[in-house]
Image 1 (cartoon, rainbow, N blue to C red):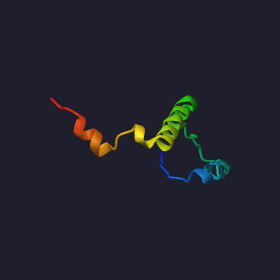
Image 2: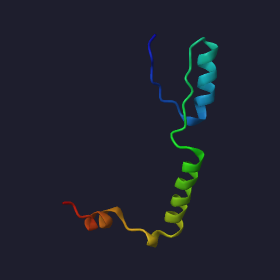
Image 3: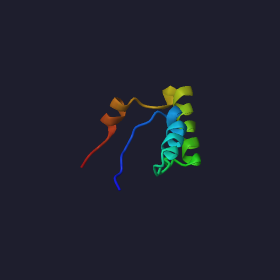
Image 4: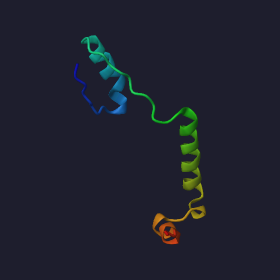
Length: 69
C-alpha cells in the first residue's frame, strides 16, 4: 500500500475525509499537534504580547543579550 501526503486547507478537511472515505480509501485522520491545554497557553501568551507589547523585547534586541560559550 502506498501513502500520500496532501496539504488541505483547514476549512476543507472534513469534506476531504468524507470524500476519500466514500471512495473506499483508508484515511488516517490528522491528530492535533497541540493539546487543548497547550493551545490555551499559546493563546494566553499571544494575548499578553498583544496587550502589553512593552513587557517584551524585540528578538533582535534579545538576541544581543545572549551569551554563547
